[in-house]
Length: 431
Image 1: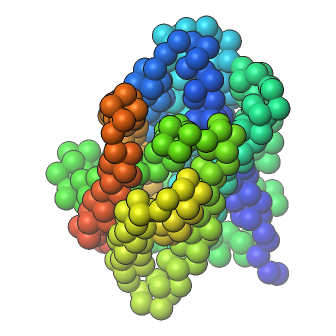
Image 2: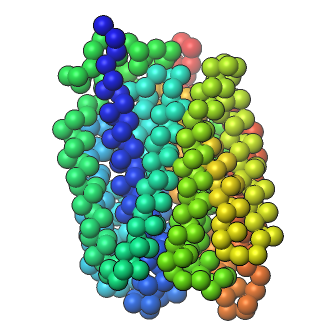
Image 3: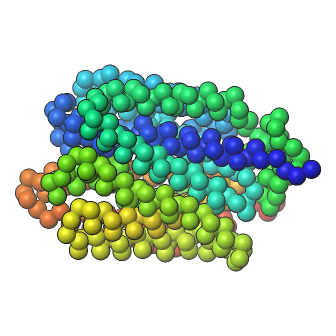
């Protein structure tokens, strides 16, 4: 009997979760200037609003992954989705910066568990030979959710819809997904009534880490002493800093630099996000193809990421030689295609290096990436305010953006995906 195809339905649900999460996360980038005018806040203060989400997102990455391993992803993921959806409703109801910051902080706590638990689902439901493609689908869905969010929100606001009503409507999507996921999904393939033995055997093919029993305790001391931990986490800090610009201040940057309408800035912001979507789909194919051809995780993970991110930095720098908002967004979009190719790399590398604790390693890496939003978003907001007030050189913002990607490319050279992070000494002896 041939293998059943339940794993593809699981992947579809994961992709929808990623899209719906970004629907409620990135809409503030388009609402930015409208909310500032209504709440009487500046760009730096709005940057602290982004930071509140990022702080919550950082703090609950590892606990969120731990919950998934202890309670099971079937319970944890829909539970978190309900919480962040309710926080979106609260965000729409508040009338001050302080209360909005509090709501977005809790929102960040809830969404923090999505990526670590998604990585665990990919490990539990997909064979090692196709995890690059599975990861790229999840990553693509995140960027696709960003595109839909930005374009839809820009259109709704152009049509005169209130930003509060838009947020309330978006919150319903996450609740609907949570119900569907809980009733269909099972934490392990063997628990699902629709899978057969052939599919369960296919999923475990080539995986040295069986999903039976409790995972070994994470050796956090060894993990923090490991050079690979710092390199893996460091690359995501700089890559996240580059990507965050697209979904936070890029629309405002285009408005200020080129004096264009809010709706036009929102639509141009979708250019680089489309590039990320297309790149992430190609990235999964390249990763799995190179791994099949070379058998090298270093080439297929680290090599792809380093080259792709260096190209991203090059195109970002080149965009400063353009003369219009559309041309700048187009050149940056070409570079963002390569950044998209690199997106599945940390997913697959963290699964490789996580052993039986992929959610914890992914959570640790993703937590480091949150530092970009916490520390850098307010600084970018302050830089934009300074350039706006002094009629300075707007290209400086793009130079900083390109520098982030270049640093990420260099750090990938120091990652060894063949090394298991935080593996107990006893487990090492059995390898």
